[in-house]
Length: 297
Image 1: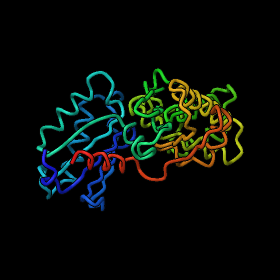
Image 2 (image 1 turned 45 degrees about the vertical axis):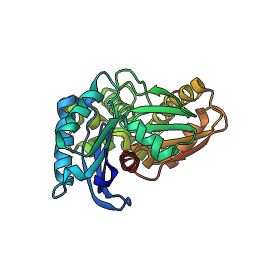
Image 3 (image 1 turned 90 degrees about the vertical axis):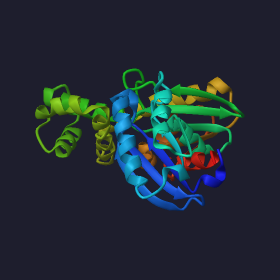
């Protein structure tokens, strides 16, 4: 590989809800940015991953020579089974001068820690934490919605829907959450069961903001949901850190739930062990993908 051939950098951040593409020049200056739907192969299958990647690559690279572009894709679920191998094989068809695919957590480690020790946590549709101590890493969580038990956008959204249905059934639940869910649906809750199941995990995760909106309105059920999910998230974070016996107290939260940092911070701090320096990543994780694409030049 000759670095002199590379003129552009393409970073791809693929999660369960959205996939972000960012094309830059070698200085890191943005040329184009694009958002498409989720591309996690565990949730929706490899064919969906390929369709999203192909669509995004064709749009964002239109008018540019592929053999002048270095690409790095961080895809949620890439490390499951042989997904990484298949995605790399798919990327090889485009004729990029350089390409690579790892997990989305690699983007978080790059963007959040920049090579330093600490723990990077993605709280998006799913949840996963990676602790780093020197060149040693340990993962906790990240096994998908059927195995992980909380701390993710999916689980918050699922809890919101459950609370809304509990209210309609007379099983207590939350009237505030029920009203907010029906407002988002634009139709009766009872008429939405088929949509909830057919549209999948990303759709369920889209109801997570309802919980935070209800919390701001003083809803006790919303507070309980946030507290329970913060507890589960802290278990994932504590597990990653304990396994390495890392002395670093740096913890960086990435992903879509960063938008709720002001609410989440005190709940997380209640359950994370030690005296952590907990921060939330302000920049998009796709910036980490661009940085890793540049390292391949």
